Every structure is written in C-alpha cells, then in structure tokens.
Length: 374
Length: 135
Image 1 (cartoon, rainbow over the protein chains, first blue to last red):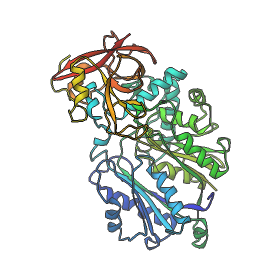
Image 2: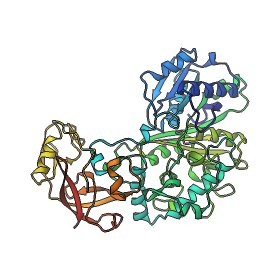
Image 3: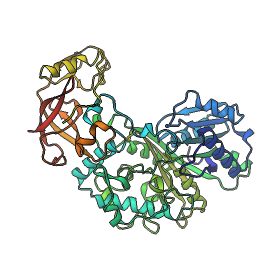
Image 4: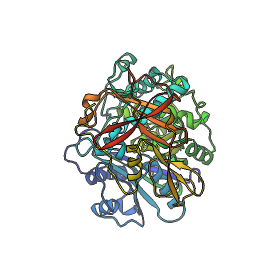
C-alpha cells in the first residue's frame, strides 16, 4: 500500500487554555481548516474517524460530531488506543479507502484537559492507591528508572531531548510553551516522581487537530495542491500494565516500526526528520531504540551532541512536540510531519523527503507509526 | 505513619481471600490448576491459558525489586505527610508481580534494580498490607 493514500489537508485550533470550548467545537474548527487546506467541501467526506476525548468520555461521540457537522459518513467511529489513536485511525482510513469502504476520510481529535477535567491524568490505580501509586508520570518514571539502571542512561541525556524540543517549540508561533530551556535549567527542574521532573512531563493542553486522507489517485483527480504520501504505517500493542510488563525498557513500538518500514521499503537510515511522541522525555529515547535508530540501551548516547536539533543528523519534534508545542495527544505531530514534507515548517529540515511519526498511548501500552514522504 | 484518610482497597468476593490471608500473615497469589501459571492481581481467568480453575497459594515472601520511583508530590492528601516515599514494582520469587513500598530505608531512593527484598506485612486501617524490606 506504499503511497496509495495521501494526507491532502491538515488543520488545527490554537493550543493552550481554550476556556469554554467544547471538544465538538474544537473538532469542527480543526476539520473546517483541514478541509479548507485540502481545498475540498465537506460533502466529499464519507469517512469520519475520531479519537475519544480523554477528559470526558461520551458514548457514540463520532455520531454526535457527525451530526454537528451535518455528515452521514459511510464508515468511521471513535477509536480508543489512547494517544496512538491518531495514527491508528489514519491507517484504518487508508485501509478503508483501499478496500472501497470510503473515498475521503476526516481524522480528528479534540480534548480540553487544561480547562475541563484533568481526571484522566491524575487517575487512581484502584487497590494500589493504598501504596501511594497514582498518576501518569509514575508509570513512565518506573520505566525511566529501569532504563537508567540497566543501561546507564543519565538525566542529562533525557535533558538533551527536552532541550531540543523546547528549542524547536520556542521558534513555533503556534506553540503553547515558547520558552527555551538550557541543560542547566533542566538540571534544576523540580522532582515530580523521581527520576522524572516537571520538565520531563508534557504540557496539559486544550485543542483540536484534523487531517484529510484520500487515495493518491483521488488527490490527482481533485488537483490537491500539496498531497503528502503515506509511505508506511504500523501498530504494536504492549498492553500489559507497567507493573506486569515482562520487559520495562522496550515496547511494541519495535513491531509497529518494523511493519511501517517494511511497507515503506525504508530503513531508519533513510529518515530525514522524526516526530516522536514525547509525553515524557524517556519516551522518544526508547522509541529511537525500538525503531532501530540505535541499539537497545544506546538511546542515551544517541540523543547527545545535538543530533536531535535542527542541523543535527535526525532533527526531532521540529514544532516542539508534546513538551513544547501542545500536550494534545499526537495528531499535531502528523501535521508537523506534513509541513516538513511540504517544505512549510517553521524549523524546516532542508530537503526533507521522509518523516517518521510515532504516536503512543497509555503508558506505552499502544503504539502506532506513520512514515510520510513525497 | 498516619492512616487517616488513606485510600484503602475495596474488598470484593474475588479479592477477599487475598486480604484475609494477609491478615493471617501470608501473602498469597493465584495459581492456575490447569497450566500452573501464577499471577497477581486477582483475576477470574488465567491470563496464560484462559481457564477459570485456580487456587490461592502462599508465596514465600522472597522477592526482588524490578523498578521503583520516589513520589515528591502528593496525588492524595493522605500522602502529604509521607513525602518523599517510594513505590516499587516487586516480583515474587514465584513470578507474580505487585505494586508495593520498600520500607525500613533511611533514604526512600536507596534501592537498586533486582535488589532482593523480603515481605513485611504492615497494618493500615482494617487492612494488612504486603510491604517489603531489603533482604
């Protein structure tokens, strides 16, 4: 299926605190902008794939959204892979198009944890509450601790990821946090759940994002101005809770990437720029290992020396990622991948012809990979 | 440690034998009668062979630390006066894993991965909890 489907348009809302905006409203704004970017009318959309808002779960949410947009899609619904949902939905849309189930799909998400409920981020883990086991950072901290102990990964190496993302986000006018962070400042960051600090944790953000997926053939017929090819995609699900996970330092991101690279006929050495889900600093480091950019355990060394910054060998999260652009779970990273391939990014990687994007959900429970190209 | 407002577990028909055995000084886990797989926390089916015939069996109390974290913020007010405290992933010698605390340390961060630990049952409210100390 390499190159059979394209992303024909992208759109997003402002990122940050959007007081009073419902998720339906933000989804519609993002969709409206994505359709305008593609230059098509909503009447052409016959697939609607929506990520479940995490701040407030609602039954039949995709139908509620379809009604609000005056649509009767042939296929779609709400998918819940946590933060991996976006790329998963893009892949389902591409497969549905290939299978003749729809022609033009809208993939969107919106959430409002900043001004709505943060419950999903601070949740209890049931009977383990009595041990003081709470929240989302704690699970990632367990993984980071094990990685540091097993492979000698250092705080400064996690800092190299954070400072790269913050540097890139500072140049992005849409970014929620436009404040670069030096390594020295990172070292002084307040401990939340050790070994992770405040600056290892992503933003909490309201916002919406949407992309339009169609076949490459349809894009040619419609004379879409800047279609970006979907060269490969894949998924992998680690599933086990962190406490039960046989290996803490690796994930099914490896399976996901193998599937995507195989479809694309590419290898890590062929990738020009990466947008890797960075809800916590340890995540891109482990993803780089699982994707095969370096060996397991060598991620700490790999991220050093400016390799992930603009001008480096593999620029990472060129719009700032979840650590700086928006903490929204993931579709904005696909949008930045599209901008890079179109040559329209704020921190443009010169001549970027391939971009790998990762999405992941839960505490590395789910993973999806997308490879974009020209 | 104060036990005021501590978020205690919810006893169910499935978990009652687990908490009752801890009251008797025994940490127990579920063992499949069909394939012999052992696990925690309580489930109705064996996650290995999917069958529903199992029994509660006693663990030796010998275990190791898979990983740990130290909380510097309180997500629940009952933990405000316990900060900083550790939470560890503990793997029993028999295989099952659980979330717990390693206590009896001057510094809650003074742990290492794969460190041997031993069960120490501590009382919190009406519950007897499985905590661990360095072996």
